[in-house]
Length: 58
Image 1 (tube, rainbow, N blue to C red):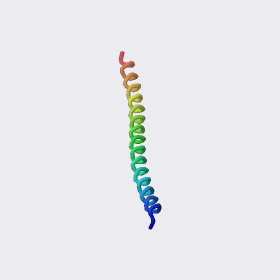
Image 2 (cartoon, rainbow, N blue to C red):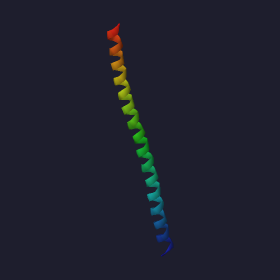
Image 3 (cartoon, rainbow, N blue to C red):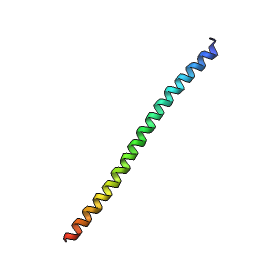
């Protein structure tokens, strides 16, 4: 195994490790954004329901 082949193998291993970390971070951020969107939608629905309930009583 010559030096060029060794560096190629090391480069591939490092690229796979970095890709794994980046994809993990990306999915974590996307999951967080998805949860925020769901919370925002539920909050708007609850707000509208509460507003309609209190508007009828007045």
